[in-house]
Picture 1 (tube, one colour):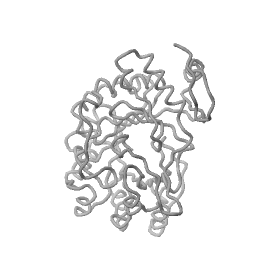
Picture 2 (cartoon, helix red, strand yellow):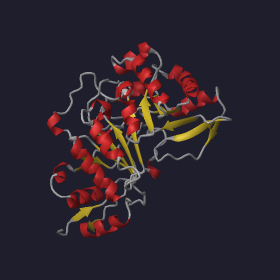
Picture 3 (cartoon, helix red, strand yellow):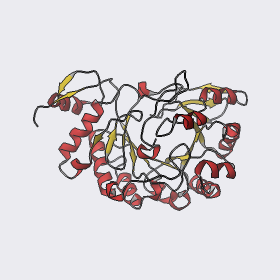
Picture 4 (cartoon, helix red, strand yellow):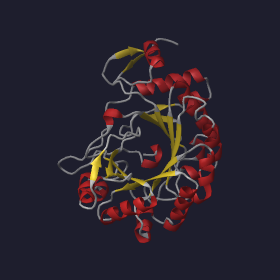
Length: 353
């Protein structure tokens, strides 16, 4: 490979040959964080239009630009060869992708037969009633399900047309067959804040874990994000009036900071991209449905793997290693004193959150 000079996040020039040698020994970025987790957005399409995720009149990418199931499997296989231990499948809504069974079958067979230790999935739950059995059959033991309210009218408002009963049916089926479920709930000011305690109580009864998430400032006007934004510090304070919460050192490899309800096994997580970022221990990179690698959710820089897929695995590996080495120290989400947000142009469905 020819000698090429690239600029690292620390503003130093480094020879690509030395870069390859360094990264083959350890999947670490320049801040000594081990990268062992890949999030894969298999499609940008979704059967919902959640107000914090995308626009109501969303224009999706041409299907010709979307990675095929085989291309996704090829990239994931290369990541696994390099040392990725956990893969989470996301979207859009992954369960509406036509080739999803092919992806699940391929990656499911990699579990414990390679570096891959765990395969997980995030879904909005609308298709669970059809695919829960397929998910479990292919080695997935736990799933995250996005659910922001138990009120049908609010659900219609948040999702712009979703069927709450269909989601609840899917959750019951998934629970019955033994899938471990965590509910992901976005805290939305003036919409669902007054029922977050009810959601926790419901999760306790269902034996589901729950994680609350602050809105992400991505591809929305500042006014819209500020209208939605509710800091999780306030949510925790509210919950502490209802439950006795204990801090934990639970680490699932994700950005959640977990507490437990005293004298129970109930976990409650908090993902706080705005009030308290989680970058110090970040262990992941993200693959979009078009083949781009974003080493940080909060940055617009990416490396495109699309062309390398059809060439040789060596070139694909080199690009992946480069993306890890160039991973920034932290994301750039913020709300400043003037109550303005620093936004990214991508919508959430592009990188899967």
